[in-house]
Image 1 (cartoon, rainbow, N blue to C red):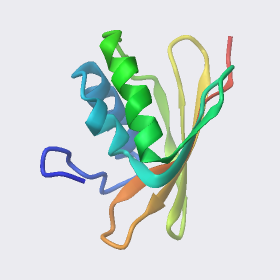
Image 2 (image 1 turned 120 degrees about the vertical axis):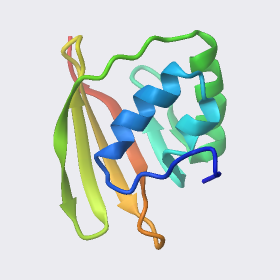
Image 3 (image 1 turned 60 degrees about the vertical axis):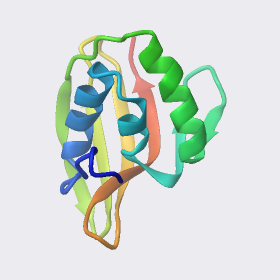
Length: 119
C-alpha cells in the first residue's frame, strides 16, 4: 500500500474505496484494495490471479472512464481475520468478496466475485 492509497481499516471500507478510486480513474488504487495473491472472477471470462493481473485489468477498466455508483452494501460478516462483503448494485446484481485482515490490521480483498446474482 502506498501513502497515496489509504488502507481499509475495516472491511466495510473496501467497497467505498472501490467506488472512489474507480471514479477517480485510479487503477493502482483499485489494485491496492486486493491482496498480492487475490483472485477476481470475471463473469464470462477467465479468473484473474494476483495483483499484477488485476492492475492490468483495472488499467483497461478505468480507461473506459466508468461512472460507478454505490449500491446497497451489506454489513461485512467478520470471523477472525476473514470477512465476507457484499453489495447489491443499482442494476440488481449482487457482488460477493472475501477480505483478509493483514498483520498490520488493514483489510484487502482476496476473492472477488463481482456478480453472483443479477439481471
